[in-house]
Image (cartoon, rainbow, N blue to C red; front, top):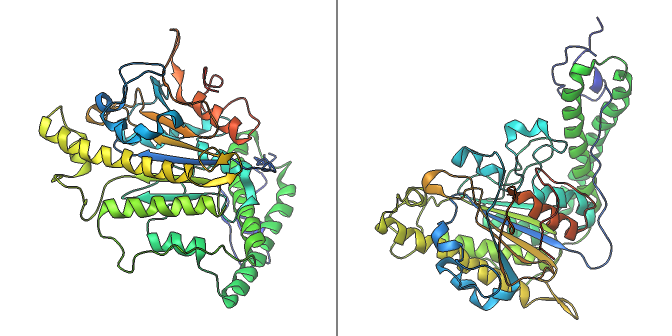
Length: 423
């Protein structure tokens, strides 16, 4: 039997890229990302709440245009024609409560990713693949109080930015020339490693059994993703960053509420300066002071309210804070013009919701989902299936978003098509 030296692929580079274990010695299948479209670009922002939204206070009782805004949507009253609320959308077959909230933007559990052609890639990352290197950052992921909501197509959760200063510096702080030279050198070294991997990979074609092809595909997909990020970083290495009059407070906030508000400010600036066109924000709990008057318990504890009125009252304060911040963010985008006849909100689709439908019962059914902006016809509460029939996957909404973003695809995750009635 032919055996493969695990260091053979990197011979002469002085570094090691570990191969997966192979029972034998298939042709790697690279997932090529589409190039971004020219002209006026579309953006995508996805905001995910780990602990859901109380259904009775989120979903309107009426459908259509003449619905009454429920408690949690009341802060969005002035923007009612700029967003759509969706009922009865979720990810078919997904259960597990908190253990499955990571499916929010993909519809697929990470441990089931291999059953799908694109794995459990999240909708924001599918859009980021399309955007490519047109902006300094292919995408930006922010996480408050926990992990993120963004996944690559080979099942890797993307680390998040957790500090305000880190995000501000990434957007506006110029990299010193000495560091640029070091980074350029690092790119060259890393590229040589990847080149050797690519060259020697050809020698494996006739030495890998069918049973090992999946493992090798995962390995080369990972290599390709690293390669794309290196190429993107090098393109922007010597281009100056944008300037802004915005400054962070000298004393960075210690409360959750202040931190959330400032991250939204930086997200808006990232879009205004075209530093990126894809952003995800994952919101968990707080490690210090919540900053919310009347809230005395932890966020997670309150989400398991058991219909206790005292807990529901405090939970309502938290959740209405989130929708208030969303309203402020959307209003800021609406006031920012990117063309004579288009605001930044017109060119930015903003998805807001959670991978939990009812946190108190750990249900992943009937997800709270709201979509704003992006040039869609808004102003309604849409319930699915609108005319009866089988369950409508939330991925149908995500496919509609991807097509509006410019991605030429007829499927995403568990989608059965685009979302009916959304134009």
